[in-house]
Image 1 (cartoon, one colour):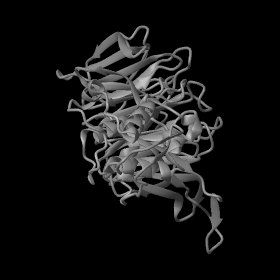
Image 2 (cartoon, helix red, strand yellow):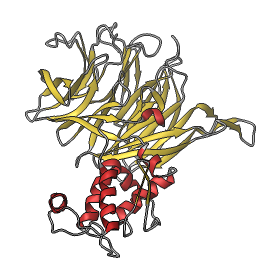
Image 3 (cartoon, one colour):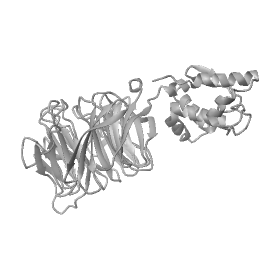
Image 4 (cartoon, one colour):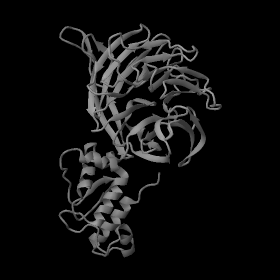
Length: 471
């Protein structure tokens, strides 16, 4: 990544200011199209074009940090004659920085100085592709530079597109149209050699596709009476012990587990008991698959219910309610003893549950965070570091978080029963990419920091998140 010329340019400006020499006219006009004048006139407000140019250049280094600084709720102080630590230089200015600059400086100081602020992860848009259909899900193809996009066309059919990342652009390799709109997909139950892709559609059908010959599915079943909202797989890609299985959650209120080796019937069916109202299941996820016997499924519903099903004992292990529709749930890792579970909601809040210790009456300890005012559509953990995860929002934004463990993960209550202790959350970075909700998100399992997201502005974006090895 080329080094920005910002610090040297500012030194030249401040040098001209100290020596009383006029600035070069053509360069200044290229910056802000105005007459020759110093970039920092002694104005108490500092709202001049030269300073705006400085703010724009600073935003190239920390635009998201500026927004985070504005959310601190206090006015930071700044020496009127210096900006310390930007790329290791001391830069002088004649007037106080603008509000946006002061907020950015405050964020840097909060993390130990301006240099520390530049060490935070940055979310960079690497490539993007406009689509002519509604995108519902996107997934990286394992062990490749390819990705899949799936959704619904304007005429009501389903579309599956295979793209390859070539430099800074996405090249379309294959396009497959299906009768029903496609809602969700997963590679989780396939081997690395086959790389079969399982999809759920609006008609309640579960299909598994060989991407080399996608005309006819290798496995197909009418799984649900209504749309399949969510799908997840385990036992494939070398992740998780036990048989390859797929779980689907539907609007019909049922959660079903499928073994692709068994035709037509599910191996497990979780549905409301007779007399209980059916709730729309919005999200499902596998977890606890650390040996051949253990495996759980977590499901989130439109009324805020979260239910944890133990597939070994075929019982409901735990349930809670977060008071708002559950949009996405995910374990930090599928192939370890249950560690953490993140659940996002309609109201812009997400919850992190410590799954190591279950209290007999209080359940699992949790910490919650109000990330934004709009819906949090997705949560995805970084495959190479399970304590880092990203959430996507209804305002077209992405938030990168880190979970910090407490000094002790459990304690005894007044009656001597073990109960969990929740940790804390820190916001590493946030960025707004679209004016529409970002509805799908997926990290590359092979390249750390590479991810893809899809939004309702009918655009798929490939992103690079930097400096993840420093957090």
